[in-house]
Length: 356
Image 1 (cartoon, rainbow, N blue to C red):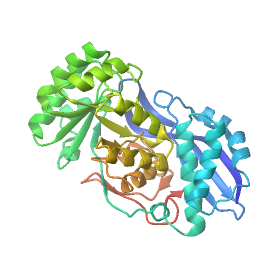
Image 2: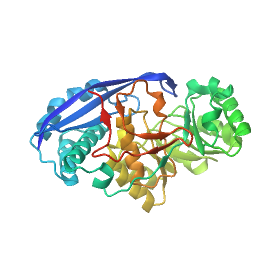
Image 3: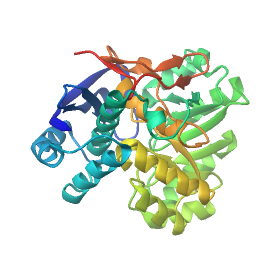
Image 4: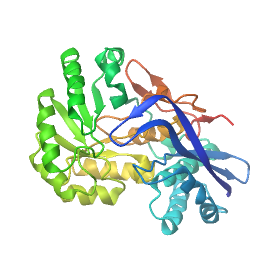
């Protein structure tokens, strides 16, 4: 039985700035969820609150502590269905707040696994498998990329994602370098809504087309459906939706309306592993390509993405290098630098150790 809920601010310093179209981040302003049962067992979860992506803040998550406590204290937690019941109870009273709900779901699953002695994959009917991620180049990495400093990471990679804003002139030299040095490397782009309306985005798409781009994420604003739909129909490069998508409903509505060709599923925008797997199943059924995205996380947050990937069949993962986070107080994920791949933990719950 659940005895106590604690939601606190959880700030993570980055080893170097991470820049994309809307922000330059020096730290991750997240929240930590702790759920304790009557025997003193504790489940942990990370809420990746990010105001420009999901409209959430750490302070907002903390402010909901009393409401979440009222809804969950005294609830039974013996099965995955009990986890679903807890999440349903929250959703009936708390709208949106998907990052916080993702952190709560993670803490519930972590606690359930610790009580039953089962890993999250076992609880959810999955099996461990290695997760391969594309390399990610932020705009703050452009100079390093052009100087060859990222070559060791790009060597042997299958995919590389390059972040971009409206200044495509700065992007082109990076694409030229990568294409010349690594001709077989698959390049993807992420504009984070920064390429303007249809006319502006289409002009930029034609500029990058010669570099054999696999897809571009979110060239236009999420609410500019007209531009996104027209680009989906006419663009020489596939359009992947990110900011346009939160939960299952968003996926179905956009895909059935012909907005976007592909989906970036992010747990901090959809509410957690269970919703991500539901979205992935719909995509599989309707032959929509997707990847499991990432917000940059501690290992506590990253592991939920890894589990979601192990429970689905994404074409690639978008998992950031764990070394981006300085002094991570959580551990347990197995990371192979050479292949940029991850193995999920096998211990009970999430399998992650959290330093007290």
